[in-house]
Structures are given as C-alpha cells and as structure tokens.
Length: 71
Image (cartoon, rainbow, N blue to C red):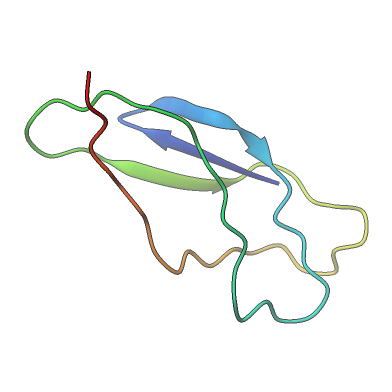
C-alpha cells in the first residue's frame, strides 16, 4: 500500500500497488490535482502497508506524468 506526498502533504489516497509477478507495463494511478508554486518540491513515495497476498514489500516508479491544468 503506497502513499505519495509532496512537500510533506499527502497527495491522493493510499493505493494498493500489489501485482502478482512483475508488472512490465505498470498501472497508471491518478493522484489528483495539485497546485505547485514555482521552484523545487520534494516528492515522497512511502510504503504504508502491505496487501495480504504480497510476500515482499517494495515499489518501483517508472515515470511521473505532470501536466498543466488551465484555470
């Protein structure tokens, strides 16, 4: 179970990233909309729990997709 935070504030809800075997494609998870000011920000990906089926407890982030939202 994974929680993402930006600058110490949780973003979205914790999500279960459990996958049987190796997930080469990766699951897209939307964390919602976040207003970021100009400058540096700290992103934290934290394992906060474990699916009952999981034998190990780790996560790999393949990429981040950030897009500007008008308005």
